[in-house]
Length: 286
Image (cartoon, rainbow, N blue to C red):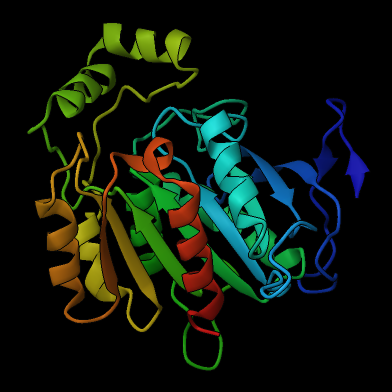
């Protein structure tokens, strides 16, 4: 590893799987297949854990944050701290967010950002990757799992071994709640994109989707046999319960649905639920 001018660790050019899991945090910029730089952080498994349940050293969580999040947001760091008790954790800022390059496409090309983070997690020596996404990130982990599949007898380093989608939409262009109407204003109006850039450190692409990407509900049937967990709050102010139920129905008996007493995404997920998600990932696909 070497350091760039900003003091960040530059991604190793060594062969994948050549290193054992790291024991100190690493921060680096990754590069997606379409050339966007992605600010990424690796946190090793915690030294503070339940003695009866040590972290799984072969497991790494890759966290896909919600819209307007980034690797340094306190609510994202809280998720990281909780999940390091169960394995290593890679977090990253989606394109257009925080210190990452590019502009947000609000769930479309973000699958390339996640793929780069998953591949890096494997390079760090972890054999199993569980992707955990929240809200927009929840839709991205579903689409990523459908598009990056491990083929029989081979596959790609960018595939996930288990998938957790929290507070995700089932379908695109939903405007049925006030928060989603505000979000669409941010995304579709020049004034909204200006507010997003300077108020939320999120730079949004001005072009419409063309073509419209695979929707979360269309992606879910393509995920099996990868273990899948869908988590949603019964008080979610963005996406009502028909969204997770639609996703679960599309899974056709594959995966699990947890309806929890909570609101929306990272801000609403408590430590107890994060612990159960960690336990699920440790055993899923193991």
